[in-house]
Image (tube, rainbow, N blue to C red; front, side):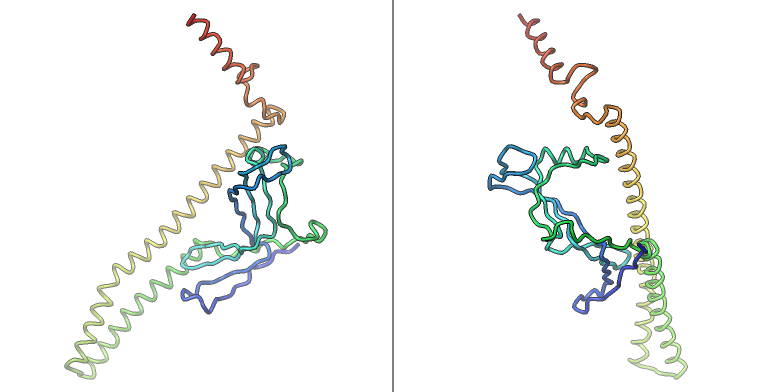
Length: 253
């Protein structure tokens, strides 16, 4: 399926006039702790008063001053409940085609009968590119204000204006020029923050990718049997601990 560019709109009720983008593939995932009820969940023989719910909901992207903010709708597309034990198993089951049991709470009435494939996202300008444009806009705005004040003062001098009117123009020009260093510094600091954030995101994603590969290699080395993680050499960890405790008890005697 071809890529689709997110559609831009502006919320007239938003005082910040930030850009809002919609795309059918935009979504958020939410995890919540749920309590009470003695709930029966698939994959467990117990009644659960504490469990985890996972929701996936449509979302929209808000962009302003080089910042991206994603907001999900309140009503999810799907909501499932999962035991704490199965949630841990889920985090260790990357690549497991069998999946982990969940209990579906909310979903479309047709379930997976009317599933459609959404178009891929045709990327927008990156936050870094957006901040560059914003920086140029801010710098031009600050410099234009100073130049405008100087131009008005120059015209007033040429017209030989005097008194209060000329004094106001002098004060305006002085203020705009005196503000230039701090305004430029703020704009540069803003751009640096965006670059630092982008670098941190890249580093975090790289670390997570490496950690996931290490985990996958470790699970493959034990043929997918995660119970072997509780073994030291050929001795199960719990039995090993019990053996040490027995020896300590004999020594005390």
